[in-house]
Image 1 (cartoon, rainbow, N blue to C red):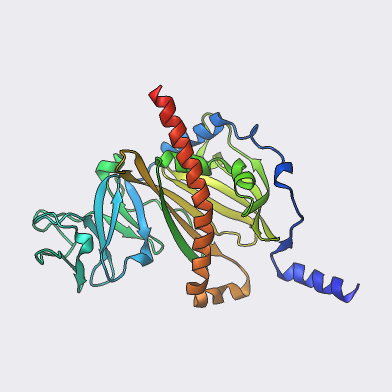
Image 2 (cartoon, one colour):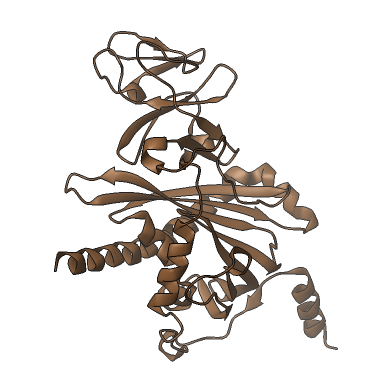
Length: 338
């Protein structure tokens, strides 16, 4: 074996990357015959039938620190902050005194202070007619329970997908589109568009199995996909599953290949109507990466340098996928008006 061939063989064993051959985008195998609308719509209907406990993720945990943070979920304006012990506090953003926006206030020793007249709220109980909302921090995402918005049987805590064991790196991306949560979930229930619509990120994508239309047992309700994640001329081949554990959540989990166990949680949180009266939906995506490679644990030490690249990649992908979701909503709206 030549020295070059020996180096190449060692590199192949130690690196997850493969050099990708040039593939002409137009020469890919068409996937429209497999991406049957009835199959996707039925998968969406099954997802919507599963419980959420009325919980909605609304922000990355690490964005709620020393200052109050504002958010809107289902048309409800919220304020979130940290208590004296670092616990998550969430409640209506409107001050019970004269309606000031509490997200513009100040936090002092875990107490939220209204900027207009100094009214103080601990966030622990009903005060001045203001009542805190059930909140949960899972270490990656911040959640709030809104029973009037969810309309389901409430649960004590959100239904959080299984995440990989340590060591992990995580990054959260959030974008807002003119669409409904159904449109975001339907996008993820269509894995066939990946290599066509996102050739900069995916190649050699093949849907190995998909649930049929109609009723499907939950244990079998998954899409199994072989795909190569693309980084320029390099690629990382994996096998991943897509499942919908709740009405507004899609989970992609790598089950074979580099990073096995890593998950991408895509949550579609309704924001409320915009100024034009059309619905807005926040895509809140958490990438929780894991690897069994020995040096992966060192990545946590340089996480502030790595996670911006993770968010950038997710943002680029979701700018395109929101265009997909927005178009789906626009077409459906036009059909409903006829």
